[in-house]
Length: 470
Ligand code: HEC
Image 1 (cartoon, rainbow, N blue to C red):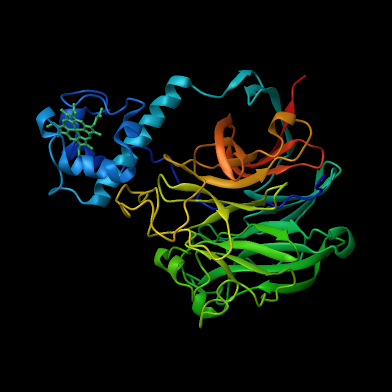
Image 2: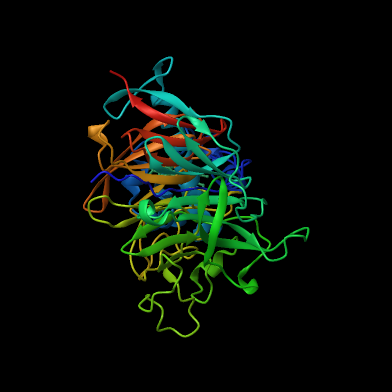
């Protein structure tokens, strides 16, 4: 089945988010307790190298690592740290070691790069990049209508139409979004029956007190139609009352998938991590509503008093990508994690994805969140990245131009400036590979109706496509 619209993804981490590998509080912890014996760069000393590849495998699970450091190996000269470090501090040290290991590994391999000017080799192909749209202002999301036509959002508030190689001015009359932090105009997608009903869906950060210096905001979803460059017929599809708005400028989530008449979308924790576990609140959740905004009566928590009725799953930190598996219809999500905790999840009815009770990450400053990476009744990710790639938009490739990639999941990274290919079999990630690096922050990924793989980049703010090189 050739799909002529792609459900995309937009992604939100601040432009200043840096690659944090090997920095912060956890570095101080390492320097204070471990450096003397394991070396400044983890490479040597009394205690030997912590960079050897099979180190974590040899030690075992995350819990085994914590036990090892607590008890030490006194006979061999490794002290016991059980009374000096908490479990979660030890866990943050483990993430730190993995960050530096991977950084070294990548330096050695020097990974993907262009083999000559604008020629790349990865994933079994030689390919080149072609710039398709230029002169954008932080583009976030793209939704194809046809080979020659697509809709694009810019976080600064504009919805623009790309048609016959030209990019339009902003469509006038789109809703006012609040451009603070990660907020602004975010996701755009056309309805699966767009050819008949012409509905265009938008997600953005809304405020009920926009004039205030620090307006409280929350994610809102609307639909409307574009007629002669005007936004018309707007209907509110999802919005919340003031009690659910807050002044944080982070973690709005968004991204849409349509399935069987329902609209699924995510809202990040809005900077209040504990609320991701609170079923009375809409943040930190994946939601399911009818595509006209009505709440389904059979949502998983509708029997729980005071539960927010559109919740489909909870414990989701900041969903930044959402797509349907083209063959099974399963919903895949990318979740922008804390440092070291980016995830790919399989989204299933009513499950708890664990944030912030379990996570593979630590805080951006290197301070610990928790030692726990797993717990009963909390769903494990299918895949996680330590160190983080700053995961963003995802897309199952459905084109015919790269047959080896058919139905593989592509995930973009912001601070890492990477495009990852994940091979999925029976809802498991069986292998991963980096396809592109250092060409820009990958905000969104989409199979084009021409079968090429399109990327929405920030820095530079362009849309490019990968084209196989004959
Ligand atoms: C007084 C020196 C000393 C200090 C301080 C020290 N270690 Fe060690 N460490 C060792 C020695 C010696 C070994 C080798 C033990 C062995 O051969 O079994 C070791 C082994 C290890 C191993 C297993 C390595 C392997 O190849 O299997 C890990 C992991 C480790 N240390 C982590 C840490 C961390 C994290 C810290 C800081 C919290 C730390 N160490 C502090 C001396 C030290």
